Length: 113
Image (cartoon, rainbow, N blue to C red; front, side, top):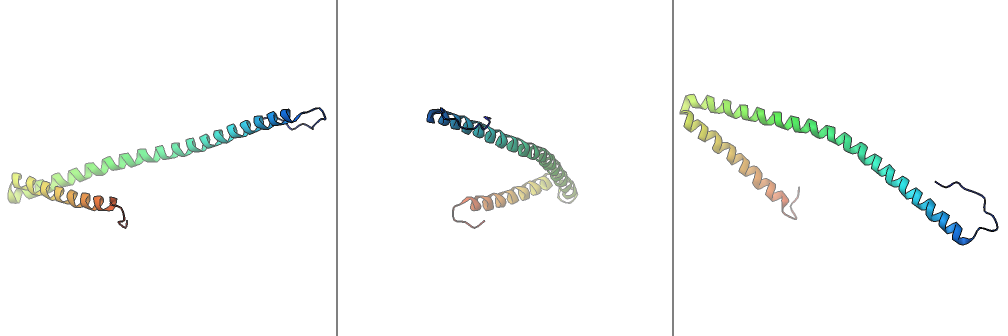
């Protein structure tokens, strides 16, 4: 960045404009560097949080699968393994369909969220 020097009589307007442009470029470069540093810091913080969310989602999915398998095994003693599997799969697909319909409705314009 340029240092401020006292103006002398022989400096022309062109020299002053050139110095002004150089200072503006330096300021713009410093601002860009500051924004890059801020974005990098935030991205690093979000990256760590995303890793934890992904691990939590995988564990939650594993727990849901274990719950569904346990439900099938429990129902198998009452109605047989084939019907127990069919009942659980149909119930899960019905819940998924209802959630998908609700989600689709929220995507429509003009719908309160």
